[in-house]
Amino acid sequence: MPKGSEIIASSLEKEGVKHVFTLPDGWIMPIYEELEKRGIKIISMRSEQAAASAADGYARSTRKLGVVAVAVGPGVANIMPSLAQAYLAGSPVLALGGRTPFSNIDKMAFEEVNVHTWVEKYTKYSRLVLSTCRLNEYVQDAAREAMTGRMGPTLLEIAKDVSLGNCESDIVYESPERYRPAGRIFGDPSAIERARELIEKSERPVIVVGSGAYWSGACEEVVKMAEAIRSPVATEGLAVGCIPTLHPLFGGNANVGIITRYADLIIAIGARFDEFLGFGRDESFYSEGTKVIQIDVDPSVIGKNKPVDVGIWGDAKAVSGQILDSLSKNRKESPKESEWSSNTSFIIKSYYNRMEEEAASDETAIRPQRLMRDLREFAGENGLFILDGGDTTAWAFLYLRSYRPGQIIWSHGPFGMIGTGISMGIAAKLGNPERDVYVVTGDGSFLMSAVEIETAVRYGIPMVVVVMNDMTWGDVYHNRILATGKKESGKYAMLEGRKYDEFAKSLGGYGETVLDPGEITSALKRARDSGFPSVVDVRVSREFNSPLSQIQGFLKRD
Image 1 (cartoon, rainbow, N blue to C red):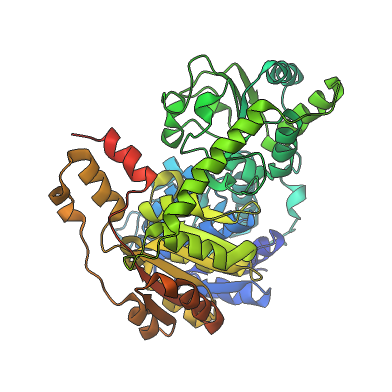
Image 2: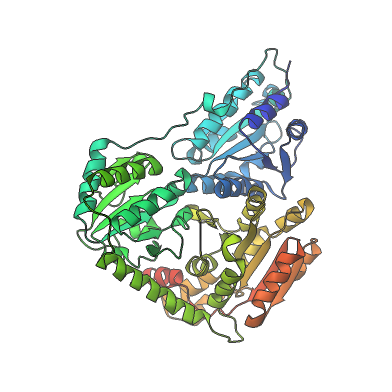
């Protein structure tokens, strides 16, 4: 007669779960005991929101299921922002939330709220579990929904009398391949042929690759396609790193629109034409008459904002492979270097060379560009970066290099919620213990979750938190000044310099403040080599506008 806690733990074990992020509560304690018996590690965070963000970070950095378990009522309410963040990022997260016993429903019980209906809009699947004997079935359903199609978060609301109850029947725990599809969705053959024809007619193709390609593991096929048609590849979202930064066909960050404006064909693979891609219509991103091929596992986004010439519903890896096969069968000669690929390579190199010149400054007032360049050179190929903040993220995307998929993870993603970087950094290190993890954050976003350094200390999780400290809400500050043309208009976004290194030390970590550009690299080395969760507080000049601020500021000009 297995108990509910045993059924939940065994179901998660079958899913291959290694870590569960949580904040302790009475209903979860028996589950903890069963999880630990099965070798699943409990990571107790300092807030429910941080626990859910950690589960999201684990999913993004491993492409595996992230799991969070939280308390009844307000505990589940506190994870709602993180569920929305995971939903818009397409991140597979399974949330387990408690509920007051069924015997107390509709009696004004303490902490009673119908959470499974509350979160329906921003989860793929949310259910109230009615029976202890059906817990395994519901975990399977939630995991299936989270991990298939366009991935996303799911939630199970489990009443105390269900999680603590007994099941009088034996439970059969199947392996995941027995209850969810392992295959991929391939594109319609006629659409593949139409895409091939457009590609072969194109003289200036650009591949724009987005997060969908990352989740499907399509990056190898994307690079092969680019090499086959001599097309530059512009990346965005979690697809940064899908093509190495140093590859000759690297086309920069798609959100900047350096080369898409010159294309006569855009092949969007797992990329949505959202605001960061100019809604597919911004004249600074696209030329009139540009043809579009869009590939996505979610049919609802194909042709959204930007009409397409060929829309292919399917998995990014599978469809990219189909197009490659079709090109190969119809190719008459080996691909050659084209004037288009040579020109775009020159444009990209010129753009980044100008940035390197800006980063070379030894001015005492440290430039954000210098910080990001030195961090890039120090971290090398082994670094895994979690980006958190507005201007901080913009500078990091421009200067950090990626050599493989998943090396640079934008924590807030399409939802735009900052302050989750440290939580995600903890999870990323647990999921990638062989990698050096750097959380790159602004001073504003840092304090929103800085207490989680204590979590990292408690569990012995080493990582380096790099604070780009300009003593402002930088993105807001610069946008406002650019929008009004008046420097004094940024005063409401000003912050004061606090001793963030001392804060880290007070929690048992390591900390340093850097005031001189010549000390950045040595401070990073001391932090990494300390073996502790560390904070390197780098005081930077606020006088430099990131390209993101320039774009947003002029769009919002009064």
